[in-house]
Amino acid sequence: MGIIATEAKLSNAAPVVRKCCALIHHQQDKPVQPDISVKHLNKVYADGFRALNDINLDIERGEIFALLGPNGAGKTTLISIICGIANISSGEVKAAGYDIVKDYRKARESIGLVPQELHTDSFETVWGAVSFSRGLFGKPPAPDHIEKILKELSLWDKRNNRIMSLSGGMKRRLMIAKALSHEPQILFLDEPTAGVDVELRRDMWDMVRKLREKGVTIILTTHYIEEAEEMADRIGVIRQGEIILVEDKAQLMSKLGKKELRLHLQHPLETIPRQLALEPVELSKDGYELIYTFDSQQEQAGVARLLRTLGDLDIEYRDIQTRESSLEEIFVGLVNE
Image (cartoon, rainbow, N blue to C red):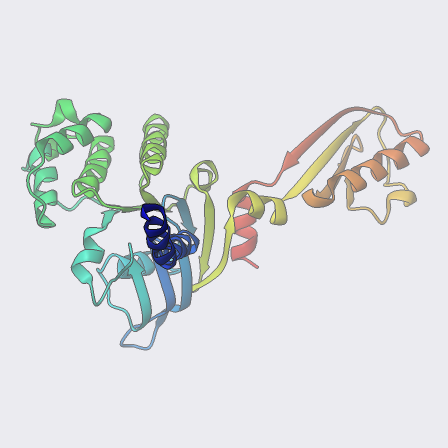
């Protein structure tokens, strides 16, 4: 009797169990929401100038996204809108899932912004400035958190110093400490290493990577292309208020990058042999180098054909060098396209 009753209960419970399993499965299949979501964003000023034109962009949780573009392209306008500093003309923007207009406080609380220039009281101490920034977001005092930030940014020994006494590099670190004071989920770095020395730049790159490892989403604008090449997971290029490209960094460099093969010849050539006339080959002025430029995705077939032709022509070479396009060259090509 007990066994029959138990089986009956299990039978009755089966639909509930299936429903729970289906719910769990549905939640697992549910796509992860991007940390930054921009849909059909436009910014038009009173004089009719269109600073942003139909921007669509998703930035995923925990990635480093580099936004590149020439001066006046719209980078600062886009960042200012996402951070709630400038108003939208039309479109929708969400930060950490919160609409930046309807849920302004929640959206802004999720964002830390490191501007290009420090705007704070020069007579304030480092500790006071960072603590004040945390308080602006309604966060309760957290001396342990602030101590941790200052130590990670090598500012702990300067915690009681007035801001006016700090070096340029230390002030730059202080801006990052202020931006991290309220424990944001998203961090904007607007030209974070402009004007700082190479050693400090490397330190800041290391710090940014550590933040990413903790799950912080980082959006970087920079004029130092090598900074984006070193750090970014994805690259976005903005030109004249429009996003013209968003691509994984490695795929971008593979698709748009060019490779250059330089063959140092044993004996100089006066002209390029007619058998190579259809190949993308140039001859150096002194005749001692053949420069072959090729698509990185067609590398093996083209190079093999070139070397085979040189062998057939009995043209000897003593050295081979290869060079790949940098992100800077790709960026310049895109902007000037």
